[in-house]
Amino acid sequence: MKKMLIINGSPRPDGVCAELIKQVTPYFAGCDIKQYDTYKMAPAPCTDCRWCEYHDGCSNPDLNIFFADFEEADYIVFFTPVYNNFFPAPLKAVIDRFQRYYSARFKRGANPPIAKHRRVGLLITSGSNSRQSADYMTSTLKQAFTVLNGEIVSRYYIPNTDSKQYTFNLVELEKFVSFLKG
Image (cartoon, rainbow, N blue to C red; front, side, top):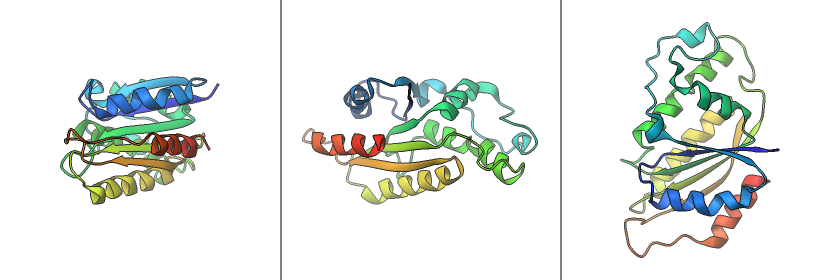
């Protein structure tokens, strides 16, 4: 059975990201789906302690279960709003903690540091029309996944979610899912 990992970067349990998660998950009904809410995870920031340069993993065990699921996933999907032109702080902290894999590859020679290749999707919502921020966020994850043995194969950006008139396009959502599944 394929495994899907959902990483929710939004603090709102009834917000746009939550609605998108509800819309996307039925397309993956045959998958084992695990969902992580970065605000509930409350990840500690990376402190560059350099422990991972000499050991597998991280000196801080708070994300051990998450990283086990992250390494086993066939599909990884980020659902995130734009906050101050980038990822919200808890999701950014998770991304910073990917340092363990950079150290595994570049300091300890594990290439790739994660054995399984994964398909990655990114759904970005924004209260305004900040496409440039969404592009920057996408570029950041693309660069990260070149080391993390994954590929961003699908992205869906939804602007103007602060407006009562925003909509998400079901055709675009289905295209997103189709590209993600391959």
